[in-house]
Each structure stands twice: as C-alpha cells, then as structure tokens.
Image (cartoon, rainbow, N blue to C red; front, side, top):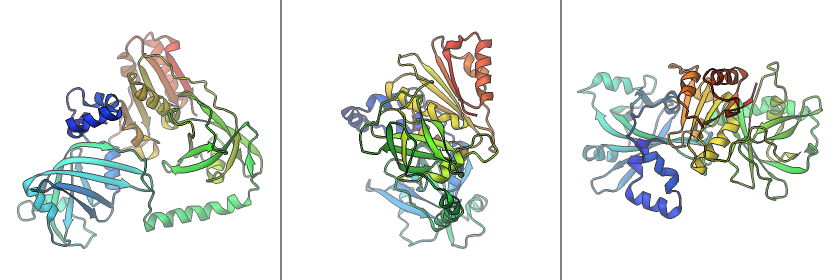
Length: 429
C-alpha cells in the first residue's frame, strides 16, 4: 500500500472509522513519511494492457460522483509511461456526463477488474481531454487501428496513486474466450483423469481434510483451500509450517509431497497451500498428478502441520527473501509480521509478474514489499550484498527459494560477519 494512496484516501472521517473498528494502527504506517514518486511497475502496466473494460468515476458540479463503465478491445486502455495512461473515447449515447464533469473537476478514479483471477487495481489520477484538432499525434497514440468504433476524443490520465485491492468477495466471471480456453484444457485432462483408479480417500493420516476451493494463481501455480472433512477446527500452526499431502500417480501408486501453508494462522477453519506444476523430467514429480487429480471435494487424510522453518515470536525486525515458489512460507510470515506490527521488509524475485504467485496480495502490505523481475522489458535484479549490508544488528533473515538464491544469501551474510543463526532458510528446488 503506497503513501500516495493513503494520503488521498485516509481522510479524517475515514481515520475516525478505522479507529472505531480497530484497524487504525495497521494502516497508520502507510501515511508516515513523504509521499513517494508514483510509478506503474511492469506488473501494473501488464495488468492494465490486458483489460478490455474498466469503471471510471468522476465528480459532478453538484458534488455527486458518477461511475461509468468503459469498454473496448483488450489493450484499449494504454500505458504511455510509468505515470501516464489514456484511452480513446468511443462514441456512445451522447450524454457526455463524464466529459462534462472533467471540465469542472479533473479528478478521476478507475477500478480495473480481472474476474477469473479475482484481482482488482484502483487508480487515482487527473484527467484531461485530448482533441484531434489540437493534438492529433497524441490522439493517434490512443487509437486502435483494428477497431472501427468512431473516436470522438482521447482521455489522458496522470496517475497520482494506485492500490491493489483484496480478492475477497470477487466472484469469478469468465468471457466467452476464457470459457472456451478452459473447456479445451479440461478436455485434454479428462482422459488422463478418467483412466486413473483414484481411491475415495487419499492418505492415512489422522486429520481428515476436504478440498474446498481451487484457484489458478498463475499459468503453472494453483492454490488449494483445505477444510476439516467434518467441519471441526483445524490444528493451529506458526508461519513457516507445512503439511505433507498424499497424491495419486498415473500408475495407481500413492506418493506424498510437502507444501508450505501460505496464509497467516488466523483462520482455524482453513489451510491454504500453493502448488507449482513442474513438467515431467524437471525433477519434482507429483505436482502434475496433483494438478490433474485434485478436485473440489477430494478427500485427504494427513498429519497435523509440522514446522522446520519457524518465524521468531519476539519483536526483532525481519528481512524476508523469496525466489519463485519459495514465496509460499514467506507470504505467511509477512502477513503474520504485519498483523503483529513487527518491522520487516520482503524482497521477492522471479521471472515475471504473471509467473509469480501472490504478487497482488503482497502489494497490499504497507510499503513493505519490493519485487524483482528477470524476464520483463525492464528487468530488475536483487542485490543481495547491498541489501544485507544495510541491516540492523538484530534483524533476522529468512530466505526460501532455489538453492542458488539461498547460497548467495548465506555466503554474503558470512562475508559481512552476520552470524549463521540469524539466517534461516528453506530450499525449494
């Protein structure tokens, strides 16, 4: 959560309600310090470019807000640079309410939705109308050459703040193209699943679980929600814990794998894990069978969570470092530390935003998370040496991810004289 968003949104009345409802302290840190320079990262830019609609609010002369749906081909809302977005305004019902409102008040608020992935991005900015007679070259940048709807004007928006919103209560909805793609995927998997003779209940642990939810986080990562099969409360755990789950392989045998619990332990009725699908031959085995075999209602018998990577429970600050799917236990730690009010930073590195789980969830933590993308137009790199050299003497370091990342952190820490016991790690190969 950025300070620019907090300073625009957390008015005295909002602060008063936060105080009444007990959330004021959690959000107060987002308002401290100078407002940063707002810049759309590669993740936001990609998200914006993939939308085919958004909701836009303007303010009328009467003080009433007006919300309008804007639609067009995917990519009609264009990113011109890190602080500027815009779109071609197609001819509509000719009421001109939004355009008229902008003459008196240039403030706008946009809500961009990704219903299948349950993501939403809020943008605040100041808008101006682009006229073909005075700025033909700028308007040409906003037009779509393959879309025949008549363009009356352009709208250019200078971004002043943005924030990612919680996925809670977003009902997944799918376009016709998205449904067709899902049907193709399901037809491809159906023969494989049908051929397997899967037991009614997998595993022989003492804790009966049922898969109650499945969410596709990235093209290769799925999140699974697990609840007690009889509705009972689940055993508690500390951030960093994992569970070992049974998996039915294609040859009929049963294997098991361990997966970290991805959420802070604040819901006694639910566990969450996230599983990266690793292609055959990449050395993991089991994840493909899990993706293909686990469905809503699948029954599992497992043992209670175990923890070989526990988060400290005192007030020492923490540095969290995650690479790829190694974010799974680190996310639980970040949420726990944020709820506790403990100082921490999270540095999360991966190939691209679309291949990294939980990026949008973590962006909601106030000024705590930095992201590094190695395969984008403007790649960024995690500088482990610079990061560790700035730490206070009591900071505890947690790193999870590929062996190469863990080795880099451990070796750098030793070179800087950081005691081994301050560096906790868990490797995901």
